[in-house]
Length: 179
Image 1 (spheres, helix red, strand yellow):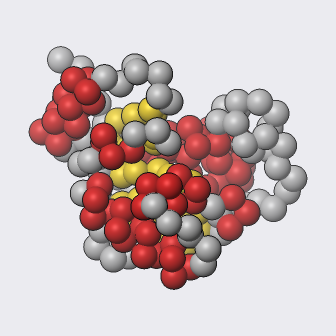
Image 2 (cartoon, helix red, strand yellow; image 1 turned 90 degrees about the vertical axis):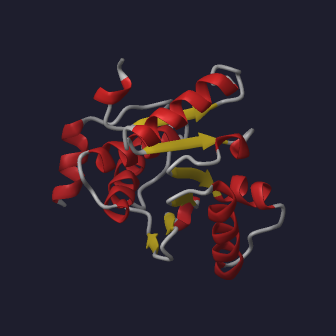
């Protein structure tokens, strides 16, 4: 079995039916059994993934999930807290465009992370994928959730400055971190 050898699980639900209920339930069950951190990014059926350790949502997806407009910091905090309870998650990472991202942890900690580089944004395609991949990789290597969120913010900042769905190399991330 592969699962015990894994160090992190990313589930990206694009609504294509690849993550069936049976597959989802198996992944969630095994990730809990083997204490493997998991994250979900889904704009279509987020509440099908209750029990995932971490959830990535952009501000519009979060507003849709809670059913009301998020137009200030207070409503963001309220929405995130409600969402965390509904999702039974350890944390929610909310990407907020030019406002950066905010990590809300179930223990009450809130980490506001400003945009890492205010250079021109060329294309946001794939930035969410970069965010979740970097976040779970950092957690899998022992980073605290706040550190993982900061690292994912840097990686996403690199990705949006490239055209099309882009990858971020180790070298690019290290160079940004050295600045």
